[in-house]
Image 1 (spheres, rainbow over the protein chains, first blue to last red):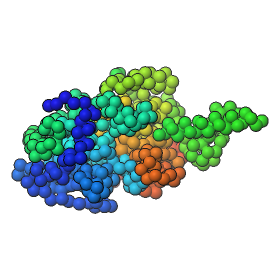
Image 2: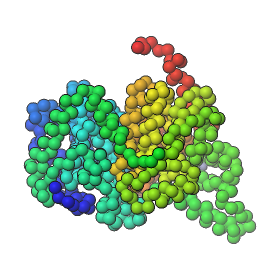
Image 3: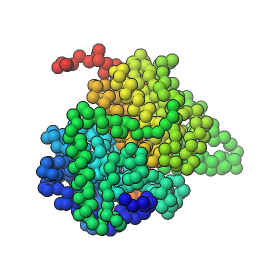
Length: 267
Length: 293
Ligand SMILES: [Zn+2]
């Protein structure tokens, strides 16, 4: 795997042709049926959900959708979900639990949307509810960071048994640009800040947050989406296979402990 | 963002005092409280005597964690948990240790939350109080771990949990580790809930970001103090996106009540009684519903 800085990886994931979940779905799954709506308020285009078939077995897919064109980005709000997006995700995860299907989440967002309607409908509550419910969801959950894992908006699909990250993906508590403007009142110091924040897949593996790094072809996923998809399918299958051997109590205890042990302090 | 708000208030106060110096009346600004909500200026003495509630608009101003505990719990009932826990610098963030040391010195706190066991008008509970003086009560490892342990101990002892929240969100200086505290605390709240135990959240000024998007929103009963700021995204960020000024009551307790995300707004002078009554109504020896196992 290549040794690149966080900033160099950010340049790769910002490439126009970076594959999105819409590119990957036909490459990853034998079948896919999209299911719409949160059955409460609406259907958020920033989050795609449905039932897919992986290795001949049904799984529930929940994904943040980056657009590949202006029209697509209008529809998907640049992958920045509203509360109804997180509630759609939760509805489909509870459905997966009912039918004993594993859940595969794909994270690819700058963050949850910051706007009036999102606040009115409880953006914070919707993410909190997902964390709470996903922590005790009685079926395996595998999350994959495709490109950008932006803060709480990413974590809303990120409480899982196994976290996989594409080699060039990043996952951060705050965007490097946002951090730069807070720290130095200068958003143009994005590059230095990115390299300081420890946001690459390797960093996250070191911190025990990420479990698997999925290799990308040299230059990035856009150079060979099919190969990237094959690598991703291998990692997801391996994770699901491992998790399928666990009894339910073991699975839930393991998930709790995965997050429980993260933290650094003295006493 | 909130620090900015206070800067504005401070600047205005300074402006006032400089004007005052030119005129005949001169009152040092530390004897005055200028309300950030309604801009009214009142004597600090009156404001303090009113439990730090604005006498003009009923804005419930911030309290320190020790002040809050004193107003809320029974005297001498507090047994503190994890009082020595302190932050380290897990991602090597420049200047973080120094900032922590300075704040420890200035506030007498180890970090941004105090947790422990107490009684409120005789009702036992596990309590946590966040203190916005400490890095805007942002959640890093210490806050995450202490809140998590509070839920875990409450689960073991079969006690309810009461958390007074205030926070600027996740603590950027601890990188991804701070983000994961949102999942950790929410998981502990879920396990406590699965035991059939009560969790009450009291939203105080200001509760925002990653804390709103985790344990602050997860109470069985969510209470807010009047006029406090509660939201997910920063006001400036939203104003930047929509290119217009937001109404004053946006992200207030009243705004949340109207949109269905708060169970009740409770004034400070009624908080102790309200909490104690709610705790009593959820005691296992009081509940006598049918169909119990
Ligand atoms: Zn006022």
